[in-house]
Length: 124
Image (cartoon, rainbow, N blue to C red; front, side):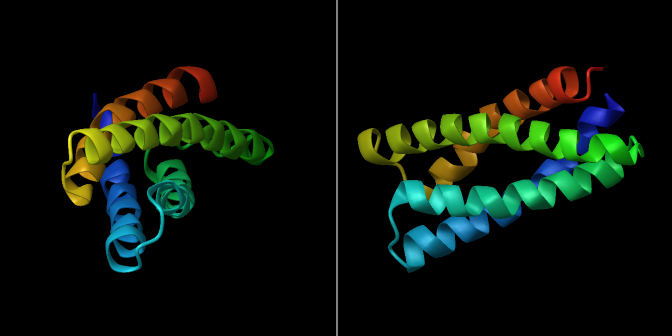
């Protein structure tokens, strides 16, 4: 349970990075929804990987770091696809505000990413 709390804290910081960049691109610059989500994803996943390695998944094995980064990236990429699909539905069909949609879409993706990282990437 402590690991999930730490993961949620790291995820919260990463979510702030993700939401801030998304909001900047989509609301202020008027860039397409999918492009904004992809850009914000790349910044957030990099933040998440390094904070997660330091605070949550602390295996110090240097040889595994490339594997871990690739695994985290692939898991997060699948989460980004899920996030983009949820955003598309919430914004285009339910006509919710983009910032609220981004926050709401992050919740199921948090659980998705945590479980896949825990059991598939780090084999716990």
